Length: 288
Image 1: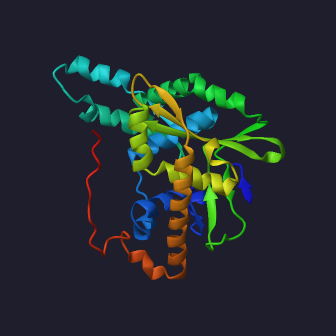
Image 2: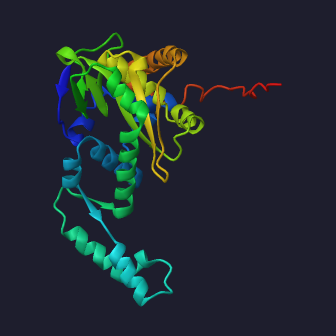
Image 3: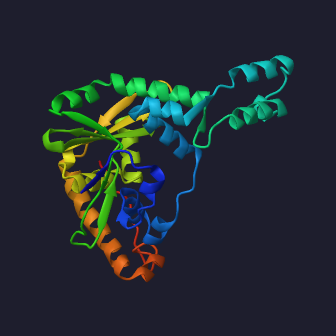
């Protein structure tokens, strides 16, 4: 296993010979062809990047992300034009923001004051979460590794090599990973809402995939769900024994599909497994 403490994002994501959890999830949800499509930049991705950076290294956050505080310029515009409904669409506002962006260095990114405030509150919520505090106390760890990159050395029985970059690892003696923490921003951290996100985005595959690569028991993987809106509640979730067993089987099937594609890349154009069959739909059983 190759371990990198600070591999640049661009380099990590360029390692196409190594299968990632994102690729696995995309194949499971749709197809090889879909998984091969590049992910377009978006505000959601920018926010997630900023949140993870803040959680793991606030000095790095302050270097990369520059907070655009537009409070004063909006107040000034509204004072002059109290009837306006969208001050951010005015020429004055756009000129002010453009000058701010021109003062940035090449690798710096703008983040809004509102998003910066959200991230601060999310971090506070996670830090004060007693379930998360208990996890730190439960494991006899000697170090914490944030955003370390791991690459497997050899192909496995499927003929595949893998890469993972866990948000946070609790490390024991001899640099042995003990537990994995994964930050998840969400609108609702309640069990019902997170369970919906969990299956929708196939977080189960991510957890078991990471644990298999790093040799960590799957029940030592913890999702820390944090709301990105007031009141910024947070909750900690892990996988049940049934979920672990079923997901391990599903992961094996996905790896097999990827393995077949590696041997015959023309299969990348295939869609969902049931795309060329008639699939009977069924209603959920009602309970009385």
